[in-house]
Amino acid sequence: MTELDEYEHYEAIVVGAGPGGAAAAARLADSGIETLVLERGVDAGSKNVSGGVIYAEESSPYTIDDLFPDFREEATERPVTANYIHNVAGDKVKTVDISDLHHHDTEWADAVLRRKMDSWLAEQVHERARESGGGLLTDVRVNGLLRERGEIVGVTCDEIDPITADLIVAADGVNSELARDAGLMDWEDPEEWFQGVKAVVDMPADAIEERFDIAPDEGEAHLFSGDLYQGVRGGGFLYTNEDTLSIGNVFHLDSIVEERAEVSNLLDALLTHPLLGQWLDDDYVELEYSAKLVPDSKKVAHRSPYRDRLVLVGDAAGQMQAQGPIIKGMNHAVTAGALAAEAFITTKGRGRPHSAGELYQRKLEDEGVMAKLRPSLYRASRAAAENDRVTNLVDTVASSAVGRMGMRRLSSTVERLYNSPLMMSVLPDTSSAYVTLPTVLAEELGERITHENDVEPPSLGDRIGDLTYDVGEPHIELQDRSWEASGDAVTACPVSSMDYGGGCYRPETVKTNGHEERVVSLDTQPCIECGTCAVVADTKWTHPSGGKGVEYREG
Image (cartoon, rainbow, N blue to C red; front, side):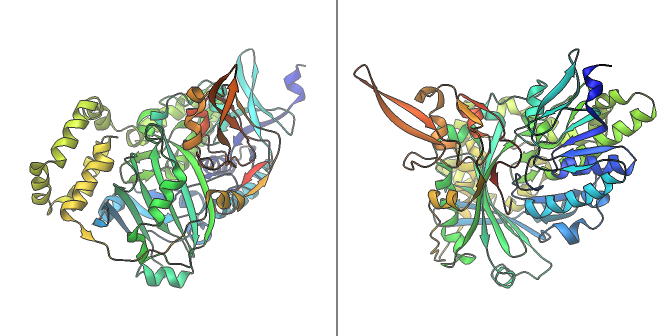
């Protein structure tokens, strides 16, 4: 008898109860697989944030309502029936209807809030898993992988003894400690990540329907790009929920660092723009402020997301599709979770359960998931399109008299170009695509906005103060507090800024041997666990223990 024999064993362990983990667990449990789901939050969804819209794609082998038939009635907000992008230049805006783009290959798309959605999914999963001898445990942080002779055979936890399994599904999000422990993902390059920051805004259902001119069974998605973000590459979003709005920004993390932009201020720039005055008023009430990292699947979606008995799904595997106005993640997590479960069910039936990862990888390719996450046309064009010289040339030409004349002549085809899936698949991650061209488009073809906007957003301190925390032991260690190594975190961290002294990362000036030195200090108490500092600063980053840290009420 070995030490491993003393540990509790399940056929499958799923780490994380988001949509990817729920899909895997439901598919496993329905096939009679003894499945244990471990969730570090006090409730499923309490640690999760999304913009967000969940899609059901016609080409996908699995959609979430395939696995959970009552999903749309019980767990979502409003169906997204219309989509728009607003190109902004000062107070001029060119709005383009991009509904055709978002309805392409789409059965339906619904706005969601993660606390409500994930909690409902977790209830269904727990009941189904119990029938096969498993279930769901909350307040449990899985902190690493259990190995025997170098092979992954289970997981270790803060709160309970190690557990072994024939399959381990890492659905523990973008900050996956299991993916890092396995050497499958890292946080080395800001270019590979987006950062999303969001406010959930209170608004009665009848006010939403009146202000957006929609029916009770309708909803809208609005995107924003142009010159309102100080040159940072990315854009904003607004989604209509049942009786709230989700408003926020998603930016390339390397651009936030390069521009030294303070992300809470960028959110305020959107909230206070005259364009939003048609929807918001001086009764503005912000219910929750949140943030998360988002993997850029074009660069980091893992081609072989498995090792030994471990498989990665969702953000843990970099499976987040972000191509200009196309932002899809939760649906790919659902598909991946179900395919991982399907692979295990098949290989177990063949007497080779530990080979599920290899079959899972093939299924991602065969079902077209990887083609969506890492489009071949983008890979083919990236080297030329994302060259600094090309970007500078495009910016120069677009801003010139000749470029502006060309933009005016293209006015009749702008909507068609925006609604082309092919065009979006090759859109480069450059300032030209996110800033210059949208700005020139608005200047030449836009209309002047005359709405008044009286919104006064909360201060960063008030936003942090309105969040719910259960503070545990510090979970981040600042390893190099010099400004050169860690100063970028002061502005990039969503709960820090140069002028606010109450956030996580704070600038300080210290005197050493008669010389003044600029350094950074860290207080993990207000941390919202987005993981930004793990990329931009010299830190040792882990999740707080189960049930500790921030608890999102909305998500």
